[in-house]
Image 1 (cartoon, rainbow, N blue to C red):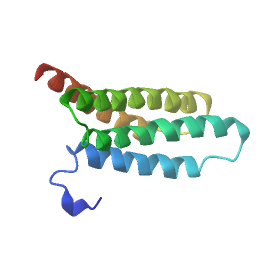
Image 2 (tube, rainbow, N blue to C red):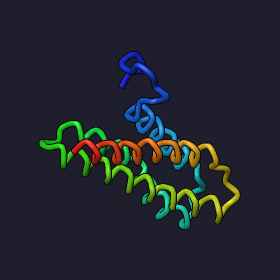
Image 3 (cartoon, helix red, strand yellow):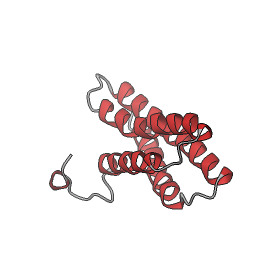
Length: 121
């Protein structure tokens, strides 16, 4: 996904989710290679990258109901990601405030989208 394809990266949910996935991958790649991080890293990688993947999948949905469902799954994945990041924050000395802030903004965008989509049914 190139930046030239996007009109406003700050408000483009696809762009934000894609970049968030990249930030998570880089963050996880720099965690210490200790057993305690392995499972949390795996879960966080799955949930964080699922946010954007489900939004992309929504574009090929066959009905508005399916489209909304993919957005709801994205929101659930965002909430799960908050859990894993919160665990890492509270159990370690890692500064993940930027990741949590971006995730909170993405979650708000997703939540607003779901509400808007459901009201347009």
